Amino acid sequence: MTVTYADGTAQVPLKVTDWRAQPAFGETEALRTNQMHTRAGPASARLAIFHQKIPLDPARGLVSITLPAATTPRPHIFAITLQKSSAAPAEGGNR
Image 1: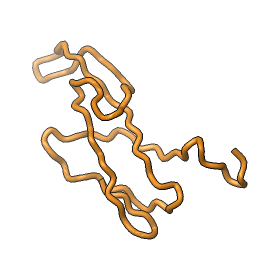
Image 2: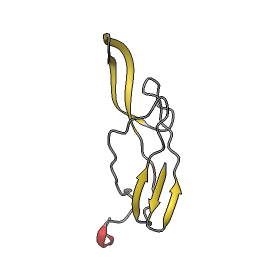
Image 3: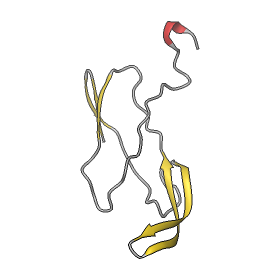
Image 4: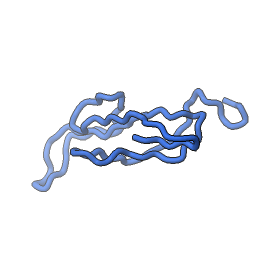
């Protein structure tokens, strides 16, 4: 994935575990289910939606995040949340 900062771009590794597997790249399970819906109807399957943290440089102004071109199977991004690390001081220098 490409991260564009105000002062330039950086490549950030993005690896995604298949939703039918155990987490393989440091993710945690956000949601786990034992059923999926198919054209033929419900089917038993152990599936997960994963939560993954990707560190960005807090000292640089973030302009954009560009995901890689779709592959097969293609990953789905359901949400992106930007959060300062708990170690970073809040505005005004307070923690």
